[in-house]
Image: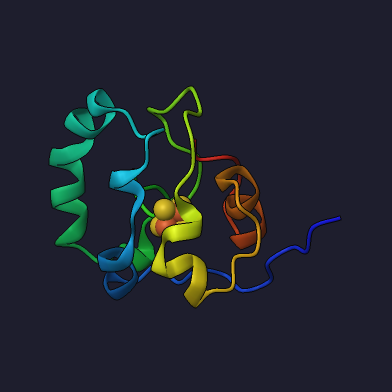
Length: 104
Ligand code: SF4
């Protein structure tokens, strides 16, 4: 049985800079294009008060754009190491890290 992460990923701009979600194969090109304008606005605001972002899925809730998992790169992400997220799949990372559902 796998261990469950207990550290909640902080919703900070510092962490957002480390986020690798944009490189994830599950985050489709169309989703990226659709969400880019909103992300730019989000990045200029206090993301600690945001309930939802289409990025850093281990800290936020489920994507409203992604509907099919096509792979996961979380294990290569600095946040995965920083917060000791010890599960490979984002569905588990999100739940363990405080997210409400699977991002991908
Ligand atoms: S650990 Fe995974 S979900 Fe979290 S920011 Fe990195 S790639 Fe995204």
